[in-house]
Length: 471
Image (cartoon, rainbow, N blue to C red; front, side, top):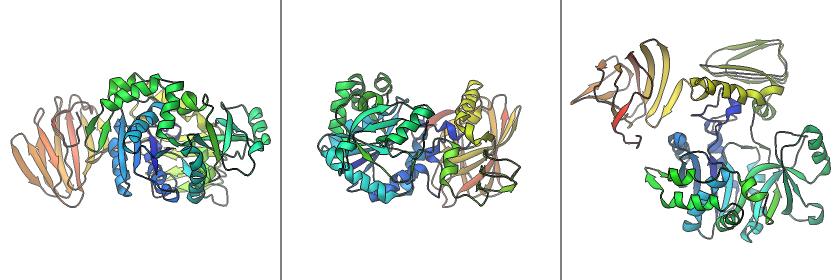
């Protein structure tokens, strides 16, 4: 049996403004109806003998990850919560420790949650090709045959000439991202592959090699797993133990040092969607070479990517550009400079701008809220609550709230009083009053919330009861 381990801890900053820290690219639908996380799971149907899915994710993404996995009927083995980012080696180690205990004969297929693979059948065949080597204890990685002198990827040099007729080749070395001239030599050599970040190995094989090459990582992860606590559908790793682990990638911690690495070529339309230009590469283009998403109007525009989410975007006389519009931000960039988007995101973070962290529409386990308008001493939100869901019982020190129901039926608790509100009815929540909003119905509840007060930050919440385990 092969246990998929999906690493879903990234933030996808180079796809800002669509991707945000609280809603990163793996949770977005970028190339189809499903999100990238969901596509990562669904393509496993082409691989052999797949077992329950283990997913390692950021704590702040946990409810979205769980909801998206449940939407597609995933057989979930475990959703493991990282208390903080420690790169891929510790994340994989925590999963390996759990898998070695529950499925000692299984192999692990480690997959980034945010990659695009256009040919799932070829992907499944590659997994099968690497299976025998992994069963024998090899640490198998999957290399992409380069089609251009790409400088944005790491490379793997494999011993292919002496292994003709085989599907798995010995790894000679891992190479850092090269300059363009060096990348051209790699392309011409024929035995260099792009590093996909996909791995197949037995859990014990990985842990044994990790203990040899970077023993502090498995030591910290074993303690983090031993002290982990169950939190609803999630397994929460112990924060202090996990923080003690060195932060390192699988490549640096293990693959570059081991003598037991093997490579399987993967030709399945792989793309790591690391920048907006990658989406232009893989999406269907019009006769002028443009990719158009949403409400877009173009005149004399060529070879560009234009994505509108909330309004009409009109463009005149541009070549080779990327334009992405959301309700609170617009990005305009030369297609050759889209890797620099991460510089803008760092600048936003430096100035504590909300646009780096979240969209106007923020997702919660009970539904969503979206800021419609705000100024000094007031804020207006549009709130949706899913059927059967409820907000926490809470109070605010600095703000009062007015709720107006526009769709559905709301059950509202204010201190000791509980009332039912239907469409066009409203209520008032005084400053300091404990209150809760619930949707007992079968349709989505929608309401408008008007906040007034001296401070309207999201951290002005005192929760005394929450069905989702939030503090």
